[in-house]
Length: 530
Image (cartoon, rainbow, N blue to C red; front, side, top):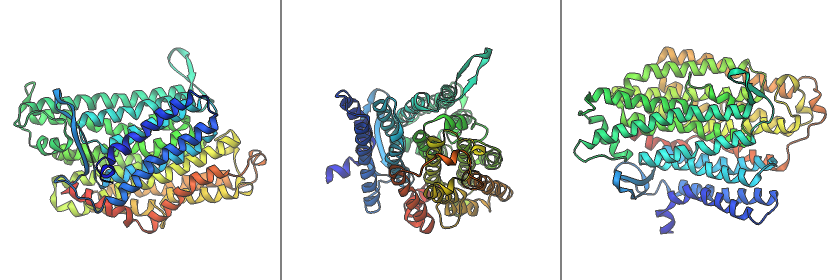
């Protein structure tokens, strides 16, 4: 047990990678596709079991002086003073559990995959390692490596297993499959942000090299030393150097959230991705950007973040309102759900903006703690509801072979279980009291109101249109006269029901009793805000 507790974070992080290797090796013996699918599902339960165990022992485990638990710190690249440092706090723990839950459920939804099953499952597990690694990394180089690991598998999942329908026209009249276009756009956008982030790492490393203590990539050490940096780099004063690094990080994370106007890659990526890819993209990948703000931008750049906070709040507002308008105008069911993610992540960004303001105004710390707790809880709640919504879009598409809302209709009469699950998940996505979205968005609004009163009031327009597009989707899919599609669709199978059931339970449990998540999150948030 001591071995397990000491090495719990490396075991959680690398068990999906080990599973991917097992899948590839077992594939050499030519097992059936069904056997590969079940093997991948069983292997994905290992990180879930470890994540649940970590959640159970976390409250009673001691934290270090910086508030992190289960730390790992071993030499990795001594020539540049980069170490393999892992640790977990309440914010990262909630994301680890979310990732552990969604991965096996997404694999169950992937049982309909028929092409190159071994490669698909291996890439999916590899993706999970990248996601988990970001949440536990406390060294910037290790953080960056895991950040990029999450990019590559998702590119191939979209490009190889995305929707086969549709083309996009490029320059010179050249046409490419829509999924290739979406995968390339996702890759380029994210890589552009990653390049800036990597350069910012090097700027910080070089700047601190001239200071007492020498250069370091330790996130904890940089958070202590970088705000006090007062030297020069390449003849530039400290203020200019910090501004350059701040904007490099901010743009990288803004692309990933995504914050308006950096969001344009997301609807295409979601629309063309396989169902399970969309579940992980909305459920976890978008959270990497918000996590980056909380783990790196706010601790490293308290003054710069406080100055930028009003702009960040305005961008959050634009994302909330404009994404809701755009979602309401969609006829593609999946694209509607994709744009809803920009809308909901806007509240996460609004909560982060409040936290940023509090870094420059201690009088606002109490309200900032409320807003930031709400932002992290919204990351959790949106991860559950968006994954469920994308799974439900996939269920219909596999039967009807269309996502056009105008071609659906009357499905509740022939798919009553599906109808009930869709209404439940949509209401959670909407923020209905009693379900997960409500306490999260309420906490953000309550915390933001004293700080950004007008912006928070205007954000209610986005909530109004959230209800409009959710009800539009329900009406178009479930109600009205039976469409031609309704005559040949079938009810959800048992695999799909099992995949969705845990999400429904967690949405209800979080909505009725959010304290079981918030008690863990609050400790880390309180420490972050100070």
